[in-house]
Image (cartoon, rainbow over all chains, first blue to last red; front, side, top):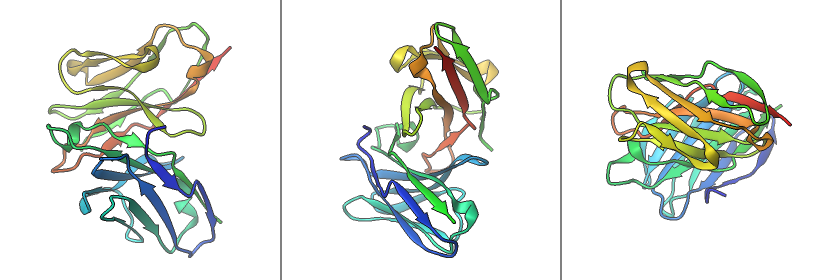
Length: 117
Length: 115
């Protein structure tokens, strides 16, 4: 158990719908990262938040958005869902070390498996 | 752009065989490298990491990796695999773009160990 929790574990929805995935980081971790894992694209970075502020964006579609709340949990919102959005969505958290965020170890949650029908 | 390549898509070994999984990265500067493992149906777990210093890094469960700067490689090794090592293994590079700290992953290598 990494200490990172994600809900729900599974989500099945239809095309065109909107869903929200939730992530609670490890206690004390300020950074939250969202990754998408699909068969064709592998593990791709979506977006990073640090202490409530967006820090970096990766290959995140405009239909997707995220936020990090004052209690440091984060939500990933996926809208106008398409079949190709079916994937595993992982959240990871890290605590900034003295060397900065790039040397921090990221701890991953169990993921949310999204199936779009 | 930074990238990570794992050339072996699927490796099949018998128990007690030695393992070496290849990982090559592209980035000319200082690198931070990681190996993660994903057991079936589970989340990614950190096996080991390289930040600086001794290029031979020891991780959990008997795994080790060697950072060879001249070859841009960070191969994962284990002298004797067990059936329980069946999993997917991901090599990752920390992104050095701006203030980012996200990981750039390879496509992964699926390891199947036959009992």
